[in-house]
Amino acid sequence: MTSYELPQVVVTMTNWNRRDDMARAIESIQSQVYPNIKILIVDNCSNDGSIQLLEDLEQQGVLSFISCPHSDFSAMDTLNMGFDIAASGAYNAKYIFVMDNDAYLPDAHNISRAVEVMERNPRAFAVSTNVLGSDMKPQMVMVDCEGNILTFQDILTLDVVEWLEFHGAATMLRVDIGKQLDWYDDRFFIHVNEIDLSIRARNAGYPVLFDGQNLTIHSSSVTARPNLRNRIHGFKNLLYVCNTYMKFTTRVPLFALIIIAYTYRLFDTILHEGFKGVPAIPYLTRWVWIALRNGALLFNPWYKRQIADEYVHIWLFHRVWKSFLYGTLRMITKRPLEFGIQ
Image (tube, rainbow, N blue to C red; front, side, top):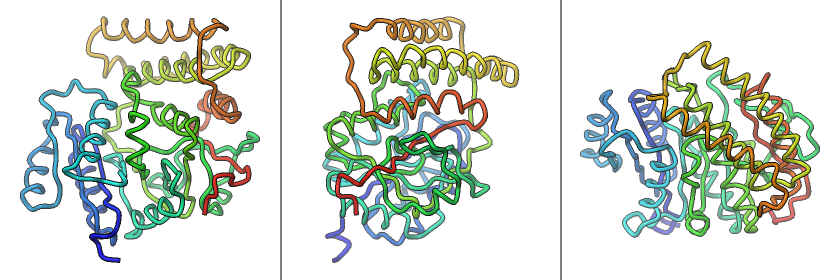
């Protein structure tokens, strides 16, 4: 099969003031052996030299990029912008490989392996790589469908299994299904968006896969921004997911857990980061109000909602209370591979 017959893959990435991280990510993409790759960067009006680097690389034919006119776009805005462009006739992508700009691909076969998995499983919406930190350890705690925490060795023994949530730092998405699902919900602004899109895909009958043998690195840039703004959006978005997809008897106790967890995390962030990342008190007040309004809906048993599968309450329960000790959680399942995963 020639490169023209292989599925078109567009690697999409967003960037804001992470020039060096982005440069390393682009270099790792260029090292991939898969021949039918295009690179598309959406830059959110960086002022650290990123634009100049992207202009040089575009002139060399390495990539294409879009420069936003200002930096007020949300993460969802810039990600969806990249997805829409990659899915357009100009690129005609069958698959989008979405990457964080502080992630990189250590193996020349990372993308070709992801394509192979997607081609073998034509109903799959996504296949997530096994994302490790720069210390080569998992960045998150993973639990199975019974709530058991998996060790690093457990994770490394996994091949391709069904997963509840893909990891947005390095995942391949199927374009036609993504267009059908309308990509990310822009109400999320930042954080928790992967679980929402994954649940919508699974509810529509499209599995989300995890490939334990396809290792990628997410270095968590020194310019990572764990500020108060991001914590508030995480709080708001967890309430939204809980309210949208969970039964009344499950979401009420989880509301209390979310309040406890994020009260701790908000005060911890203020203690270490101050109010960095929150440009104005009206901004803070607006998003706190949205979070509390979402929380109030949790107590309305008549609020119409779409129920996700039986794994959601396990995932969110662990994600909230284990966040005190472990940080971000993702969840896989060990149930039979009912979608014919190969």
